[in-house]
Amino acid sequence: MQIAIDGPASAGKSTIAKIIAQKLNYVYTDTGAMYRAVTLLAQQHQLAYDDEAQIVQLMSQTPISFRVLAGQQHIFLGTQDVTTAIRLPAISRNVSQVAALKKVREILVQQQQKIAQDANVVMDGRDIGTVVLPQADVKIFLIASVAERAQRRYRENLTRGITTSLSALQAEIKTRDYKDSHRTISPLRKASDAIEVDTTGLNIAQVVTKVMEIIQQKL
Ligand code: C5P
Image 1 (cartoon, rainbow, N blue to C red):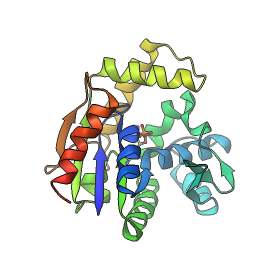
Image 2 (cartoon, rainbow, N blue to C red):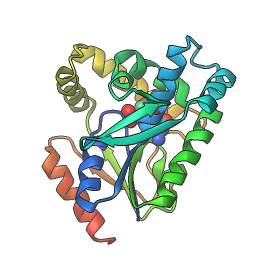
Image 3 (cartoon, rainbow, N blue to C red):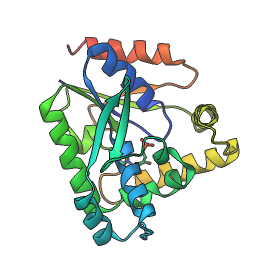
Protein backbone atom coordinates (compact mmCIF):
# COMPACT_ATOMS: atom_id res chain seq x y z
CA MET A 1 0.00 0.00 0.00
CA GLN A 2 1.36 3.40 -0.98
CA ILE A 3 -0.02 6.70 0.27
CA ALA A 4 1.42 9.84 -1.36
CA ILE A 5 1.04 13.23 0.31
CA ASP A 6 2.24 16.21 -1.69
CA GLY A 7 1.78 19.94 -1.39
CA PRO A 8 3.53 23.29 -0.96
CA ALA A 9 5.88 24.26 1.88
CA SER A 10 4.53 24.09 5.44
CA ALA A 11 1.08 22.81 4.45
CA GLY A 12 1.27 20.29 7.31
CA LYS A 13 2.26 17.33 5.17
CA SER A 14 4.76 15.79 7.56
CA THR A 15 2.59 16.30 10.66
CA ILE A 16 -0.37 14.60 8.97
CA ALA A 17 1.70 11.91 7.23
CA LYS A 18 3.36 10.94 10.51
CA ILE A 19 0.02 10.53 12.32
CA ILE A 20 -1.52 8.57 9.43
CA ALA A 21 1.51 6.26 9.24
CA GLN A 22 1.27 5.63 12.98
CA LYS A 23 -2.46 4.86 12.79
CA LEU A 24 -1.97 2.40 9.93
CA ASN A 25 1.36 1.05 11.16
CA TYR A 26 3.03 2.01 7.87
CA VAL A 27 6.54 3.37 7.32
CA TYR A 28 6.63 7.18 7.17
CA THR A 29 9.10 8.72 4.73
CA ASP A 30 9.81 12.46 4.77
CA THR A 31 11.41 13.02 1.36
CA GLY A 32 11.89 16.74 2.06
CA ALA A 33 14.23 15.73 4.88
CA MET A 34 16.36 13.88 2.32
CA TYR A 35 16.74 16.97 0.10
CA ARG A 36 17.49 18.99 3.23
CA ALA A 37 20.16 16.47 4.27
CA VAL A 38 21.88 16.79 0.88
CA THR A 39 21.76 20.59 1.21
CA LEU A 40 23.39 20.33 4.64
CA LEU A 41 26.04 18.03 3.18
CA ALA A 42 26.86 20.64 0.54
CA GLN A 43 26.94 23.38 3.19
CA GLN A 44 29.26 21.38 5.47
CA HIS A 45 31.71 20.96 2.57
CA GLN A 46 31.33 24.59 1.50
CA LEU A 47 30.15 23.61 -1.96
CA ALA A 48 28.10 25.87 -4.19
CA TYR A 49 24.49 24.69 -4.13
CA ASP A 50 24.51 24.21 -7.90
CA ASP A 51 27.74 22.19 -7.99
CA GLU A 52 26.00 19.03 -9.11
CA ALA A 53 29.11 16.94 -9.78
CA GLN A 54 30.68 17.57 -6.35
CA ILE A 55 27.41 17.15 -4.50
CA VAL A 56 26.73 13.84 -6.24
CA GLN A 57 30.27 12.71 -5.46
CA LEU A 58 29.75 13.49 -1.77
CA MET A 59 26.38 11.72 -1.79
CA SER A 60 28.04 8.54 -3.02
CA GLN A 61 30.31 8.61 0.05
CA THR A 62 27.66 9.61 2.59
CA PRO A 63 24.51 7.48 2.76
CA ILE A 64 21.28 9.05 3.96
CA SER A 65 19.24 6.85 6.28
CA PHE A 66 16.25 7.01 8.60
CA ARG A 67 16.24 5.46 12.05
CA VAL A 68 13.57 5.44 14.76
CA LEU A 69 15.03 6.44 18.13
CA ALA A 70 12.78 6.54 21.21
CA GLY A 71 9.72 6.53 18.96
CA GLN A 72 10.90 9.51 16.88
CA GLN A 73 12.18 9.32 13.33
CA HIS A 74 15.72 10.62 12.92
CA ILE A 75 17.65 11.23 9.72
CA PHE A 76 21.35 10.47 9.39
CA LEU A 77 24.06 11.63 7.01
CA GLY A 78 26.50 8.76 7.31
CA THR A 79 26.81 8.36 11.09
CA GLN A 80 25.80 11.94 11.86
CA ASP A 81 22.30 12.59 13.26
CA VAL A 82 21.16 15.68 11.33
CA THR A 83 17.49 15.69 12.38
CA THR A 84 17.73 19.14 13.98
CA ALA A 85 20.37 20.70 11.72
CA ILE A 86 18.32 20.23 8.53
CA ARG A 87 15.55 22.50 9.89
CA LEU A 88 17.78 25.56 10.29
CA PRO A 89 16.82 28.64 8.21
CA ALA A 90 20.00 28.46 6.06
CA ILE A 91 18.93 25.02 4.86
CA SER A 92 15.32 26.08 4.20
CA ARG A 93 16.60 29.02 2.15
CA ASN A 94 18.85 26.90 -0.08
CA VAL A 95 17.17 23.51 -0.34
CA SER A 96 15.13 24.35 -3.45
CA GLN A 97 18.32 25.03 -5.38
CA VAL A 98 19.80 21.64 -4.49
CA ALA A 99 16.44 19.91 -5.12
CA ALA A 100 16.46 21.28 -8.67
CA LEU A 101 19.59 19.28 -9.57
CA LYS A 102 18.76 16.40 -11.92
CA LYS A 103 21.24 13.85 -10.60
CA VAL A 104 20.45 14.60 -6.97
CA ARG A 105 16.78 13.91 -7.73
CA GLU A 106 17.58 10.70 -9.61
CA ILE A 107 19.53 9.31 -6.66
CA LEU A 108 16.96 10.28 -4.03
CA VAL A 109 13.96 9.17 -6.10
CA GLN A 110 15.56 5.76 -6.55
CA GLN A 111 16.11 5.49 -2.80
CA GLN A 112 12.51 6.55 -2.12
CA GLN A 113 11.13 3.97 -4.57
CA LYS A 114 13.23 1.28 -2.87
CA ILE A 115 11.75 2.21 0.53
CA ALA A 116 8.23 1.93 -0.95
CA GLN A 117 9.02 -1.44 -2.52
CA ASP A 118 9.92 -2.98 0.80
CA ALA A 119 7.06 -1.72 2.99
CA ASN A 120 3.63 -0.09 3.18
CA VAL A 121 4.41 3.62 3.15
CA VAL A 122 3.08 7.07 3.74
CA MET A 123 5.48 9.29 1.82
CA ASP A 124 5.36 13.07 1.72
CA GLY A 125 7.03 15.54 -0.61
CA ARG A 126 6.45 17.47 -3.82
CA ASP A 127 6.61 14.83 -6.58
CA ILE A 128 5.47 11.64 -4.85
CA GLY A 129 2.15 11.30 -6.68
CA THR A 130 3.58 12.46 -10.00
CA VAL A 131 7.06 10.91 -10.20
CA VAL A 132 8.16 8.78 -7.24
CA LEU A 133 5.02 6.66 -6.79
CA PRO A 134 2.78 7.37 -9.80
CA GLN A 135 0.87 4.15 -9.02
CA ALA A 136 0.21 5.10 -5.38
CA ASP A 137 -3.08 3.77 -4.02
CA VAL A 138 -3.99 7.10 -2.46
CA LYS A 139 -2.77 10.57 -3.50
CA ILE A 140 -3.47 13.58 -1.35
CA PHE A 141 -2.54 17.16 -2.23
CA LEU A 142 -2.51 19.29 0.94
CA ILE A 143 -2.83 23.04 0.63
CA ALA A 144 -3.40 26.02 2.97
CA SER A 145 -3.19 29.80 2.66
CA VAL A 146 0.31 31.33 2.82
CA ALA A 147 -0.66 33.33 5.94
CA GLU A 148 -1.73 30.22 7.79
CA ARG A 149 1.29 28.19 6.68
CA ALA A 150 3.64 30.93 7.91
CA GLN A 151 1.79 31.03 11.26
CA ARG A 152 2.16 27.26 11.67
CA ARG A 153 5.86 27.32 10.78
CA TYR A 154 6.37 30.26 13.17
CA ARG A 155 4.87 28.33 16.08
CA GLU A 156 6.79 25.17 15.16
CA ASN A 157 10.05 27.12 14.91
CA LEU A 158 9.56 28.63 18.37
CA THR A 159 9.43 25.14 19.88
CA ARG A 160 12.84 24.57 18.27
CA GLY A 161 14.27 27.88 19.43
CA ILE A 162 14.25 29.40 15.91
CA THR A 163 12.96 32.98 15.97
CA THR A 164 12.60 33.99 12.29
CA SER A 165 9.89 36.69 11.97
CA LEU A 166 6.46 35.93 10.56
CA SER A 167 6.98 38.22 7.56
CA ALA A 168 10.34 36.59 6.76
CA LEU A 169 8.66 33.18 6.93
CA GLN A 170 5.88 34.28 4.57
CA ALA A 171 8.48 35.53 2.10
CA GLU A 172 10.51 32.31 2.41
CA ILE A 173 7.44 30.10 1.87
CA LYS A 174 6.38 32.10 -1.22
CA THR A 175 9.87 31.98 -2.71
CA ARG A 176 10.26 28.25 -2.04
CA ASP A 177 6.83 27.47 -3.56
CA TYR A 178 7.71 29.52 -6.62
CA LYS A 179 11.07 27.76 -7.10
CA ASP A 180 9.61 24.30 -6.42
CA SER A 181 6.74 24.77 -8.88
CA HIS A 182 8.79 26.40 -11.63
CA ARG A 183 11.83 24.10 -11.80
CA THR A 184 12.29 22.02 -14.94
CA ILE A 185 12.55 18.60 -13.33
CA SER A 186 9.62 17.19 -11.35
CA PRO A 187 8.07 20.52 -10.37
CA LEU A 188 5.57 20.68 -7.54
CA ARG A 189 2.15 20.02 -9.01
CA LYS A 190 -0.98 18.14 -8.13
CA ALA A 191 -1.23 14.74 -9.83
CA SER A 192 -4.34 14.50 -11.99
CA ASP A 193 -5.69 11.73 -9.76
CA ALA A 194 -4.80 13.38 -6.43
CA ILE A 195 -7.47 14.59 -4.02
CA GLU A 196 -6.94 18.15 -2.85
CA VAL A 197 -7.47 18.87 0.84
CA ASP A 198 -7.47 22.53 1.90
CA THR A 199 -6.38 22.66 5.53
CA THR A 200 -6.88 26.42 6.03
CA GLY A 201 -8.85 26.90 9.25
CA LEU A 202 -8.68 23.22 10.18
CA ASN A 203 -6.80 21.79 13.14
CA ILE A 204 -4.59 18.70 12.95
CA ALA A 205 -7.31 16.31 14.14
CA GLN A 206 -9.76 17.63 11.54
CA VAL A 207 -7.24 17.19 8.71
CA VAL A 208 -6.37 13.67 9.92
CA THR A 209 -10.08 12.75 9.92
CA LYS A 210 -10.52 14.06 6.36
CA VAL A 211 -7.45 12.24 5.06
CA MET A 212 -8.35 9.01 6.88
CA GLU A 213 -11.81 9.11 5.29
CA ILE A 214 -10.21 9.32 1.85
CA ILE A 215 -7.84 6.44 2.68
CA GLN A 216 -10.60 4.23 4.16
CA GLN A 217 -12.40 4.32 0.83
CA LYS A 218 -9.35 2.70 -0.79
CA LEU A 219 -8.45 0.14 1.85
O1 C5P B 1 9.04 19.12 2.76
P1 C5P B 1 10.10 20.18 3.00
O2 C5P B 1 9.53 21.56 3.05
O3 C5P B 1 10.97 19.86 4.17
O4 C5P B 1 11.01 20.09 1.70
C1 C5P B 1 12.15 20.88 1.56
C2 C5P B 1 12.43 21.12 0.09
O5 C5P B 1 12.86 19.91 -0.53
C3 C5P B 1 11.28 21.61 -0.77
O6 C5P B 1 11.11 23.01 -0.69
C4 C5P B 1 11.71 21.16 -2.16
O7 C5P B 1 12.63 22.07 -2.72
C5 C5P B 1 12.45 19.87 -1.88
N1 C5P B 1 11.64 18.67 -2.11
C6 C5P B 1 11.51 18.22 -3.40
N2 C5P B 1 10.86 17.04 -3.64
C7 C5P B 1 10.33 16.34 -2.65
C8 C5P B 1 10.42 16.79 -1.31
C9 C5P B 1 11.06 18.01 -1.08
O8 C5P B 1 11.99 18.85 -4.33
N3 C5P B 1 9.74 15.16 -2.91
